[in-house]
Image 1 (cartoon, one colour):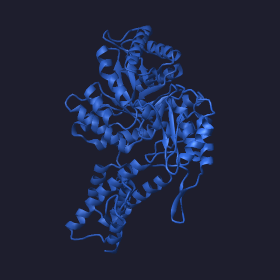
Image 2: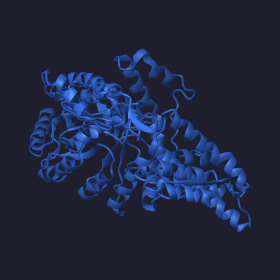
Image 3: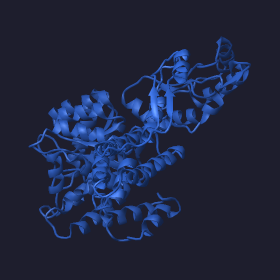
Image 4: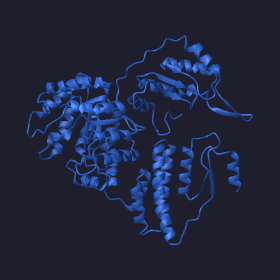
Length: 548
């Protein structure tokens, strides 16, 4: 009824992921009656460019005289299905509680309707498992900080596989306002394929932002796309035949939008027309692989003005022409200032010029106050910020005009453990717990850090501000902390009293145990003695175990 999946995914996210994977049709089934399914169907149809399936229940189940019945009759069901057909759903049926009578009455009404043609929506979108970002009028910010180029600390973190540092860098960029996170592990002395896969998996456990998978290594790209749960932003392809031959099959197979660099075997053209010519070549080649132009985002490239004073103008001309052609654009902004003093001044001014020309997305530093000043001001001035709410919130921060600090700053051990549990950072949870136990009693760590963090996550879950993946990761981080505490207490000859014995199972015929497993982890974290009988368990076994 909240119009989301258990993961928190909305209908628009579901559409973007499945269309990216090349399905022939998609839709919704079970869960609700057709009346309550209407808003979900409406959102699916507004986003889908392929046939839509709708198979609702006959309402919700109710128990009458010991029997399960459903609360919507065949006539009411058919009437709602008629409304769904009028919205544009083309494949209709029924799920739990429906009978041949339901389908017959639905046919009687919908067969009289004219079939609505399927419309191509031409939306350029990427998504995580539960969050969609669309490239359109409002500019998209792609956080650039997880890229080792020119970053000594990040390079060392990659070498040492210090993933906690890298994850905090990503979380910090999300807090600072990034819409998408660029993830790059391109160091020659490490196994890029292994590290990039690790980072893609880990980032999906701590953030719901879509990821831009950034590598020139096709093997690393494919391995990471296999791990990615959503529709990724692929960075990048270019006009070289070899590049298109490597990347386009991956984009087609795994589903993604592709950043396209306007260079080829002859390098980067000096003119806007030369770069547009390469873009047209990329578009035509993509079609041969079954990839639509809507899934191509072009980077017109910018050289530093310190060596070519006209380079910025050429880039802006490109953006302007691409906009006329209906082509989406992205740009690595900071290249323009390389070799110059006070680079932020050049970067932010160029960013403003590019936005005014029609730039759709920028790979940039969300910690830069100058860049964020431009972004929020531009959105307010361009009628992309209703009632200037985002601008006002940004401008009224206590640290106005000061750089937003990244997550990699000192915090107290107590706060660190609470944040680690909330964000599902298992290594950090373990480390902070060990550190706290040097000065605090185990029960104090539990009562002052772990339980408050679990309570806060539970509250967020109830209010729909966190979803199943975050809940599971938080519970896992708490479990790691508890394991450290239990080991310390056992070493000291102490133990924490178990509360009550709880018997858990799913009943015979129910093979879905995800809910049971969540309950088990949380109960164990709160020190209940859990006896888990598993799934599909005979009622007599459950009763006998409870009696015993």
